[in-house]
Amino acid sequence: MRLALRGWLRRYHSHGRVCVALSGGADSLALTAAAVAEAESVDALIVDHRLQEGSDVVARAAADQALALGVRSARVLTVDVHGNGSLEAAARDARYEALDGSRGDAPVLLGHTLDDQAETVLLGLARGSGGRSIQGMQAFDDPWGRPLLGVRRGVTRAACEDLSITPWEDPHNTDDEFTRVRLRHEALPLLEEILAGGVAEALARTATQLREDGQVLDALAGAVLLRVVVDGEVEVDTLAESAGAIRRRVLRSWLLGSGAKALTDKQLRAVDALIADWRGQGGVAIGGGTPESRLVVVRRRGRLTVGFEDRRRV
Image 1 (spheres, rainbow, N blue to C red):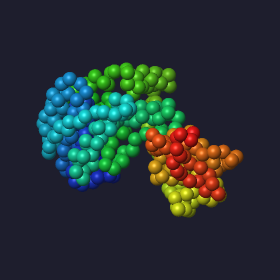
Image 2: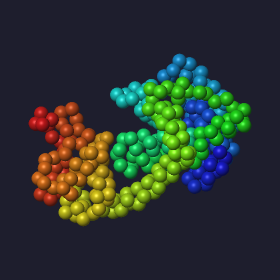
Image 3: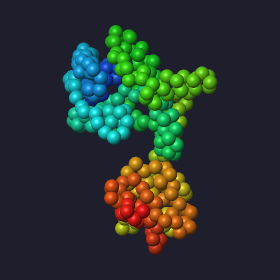
Image 4: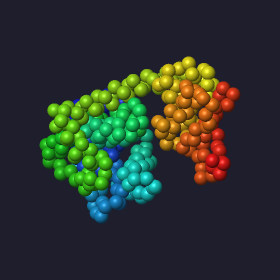
């Protein structure tokens, strides 16, 4: 654990204060202990989602454990979880917002392990949204740091045992209503059995390789983007000279910068067909519109443009 923290700090944050997002579970408790041993100063941030009875007691107990481990401070952040999506997504959004608002200028260390990375890759693979969806989590995505992506979950539990720390067992982590829980307890163990082990490590390696390749392609696409976008519109003939992987990255950046939301691979490929498979087809609707108008990409006079179209005309 300490070696993982030491390596992360040396590469991404060699001096100064860090915060640790502490749930009270084994991963974040072991992370807190290692951070206290390796970082200059550590502040623990405990988010109380108030989704379970007695969550305030759990949060306070985690704060007390952090103080006993030697953190400089331990704060409980109470949040309201709401939203139209899944409970998991709403809780995550509320948690990250609270952590970001309380960290000051320090990075926040998260207790995601190699096992979490493997689960994330499998979830991305199931979505089928291309290489970007299975690149997994980054070790540092400012301000979020993940020093334990090379550490197995069993190691964090062993660290807690060695330190005589009793972690909190979140009942949500055994609730099979959550897809990630079923991956953790059913799918991954089955894959490990069928493929004779090493699956989690292989998935994590694949994520790293795809992320490294993706960074190179993104850099190439960034240079092309500067050439093909004129007055907010894409010059079709110029972009058509690029390979598909570069072309779609350019279009993705352009669309997101033009107000697109929750862009899917299907939508992106439909927009790309306006260049690579042009047959005079109509516009492509993408997410990011309003209840009255939808956001549409059209090809006119050799350029792609983004604009709003009255839904009543559809």
